[in-house]
Image (cartoon, rainbow, N blue to C red):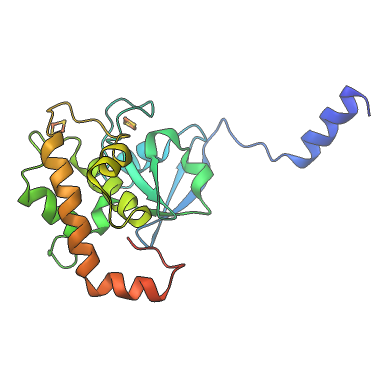
Length: 191
Ligand code: FES
Ligand code: FES
């Protein structure tokens, strides 16, 4: 096959969208959010600027600091590094979903109990990263916590409190009835 024939084949099989706005629908915290967006809009910008979900923070905006961490199908991702148009088939979980009728999630409570924040700008990202981490490593050692949470940065330097919070959250989640239910359904998200 010649190069031009190969390119024609690729064009036939590829759906090209944009640069104008296109309808985008993303499932976040169990609810469908829609907007007409340019294909270059990130999930983070869509959430913050169009859908009033401002828990995930924009700091570095280049996949370095973790302030924008969300769960995609239960796995940690930087929302600044995903295009909204590319996650239309996925299930997104943000920090806004964690409390139940005003009662904090065990991870949120652990961050409060351990004074694991100062300015708080990184905190939502750390909390979501902790949720994802503990679903991967339910009973981590201190070394595993250090390594597992290394994708998030805190400019205020509250790392000691954060490490204690993650350890406390692991114990709290381990004792919760929700965790027992999740064990019975291994394919269900633990978040
Ligand atoms: S804002 Fe996304 S990693 Fe820093
Ligand atoms: S608490 Fe200020 S950046 Fe982490």
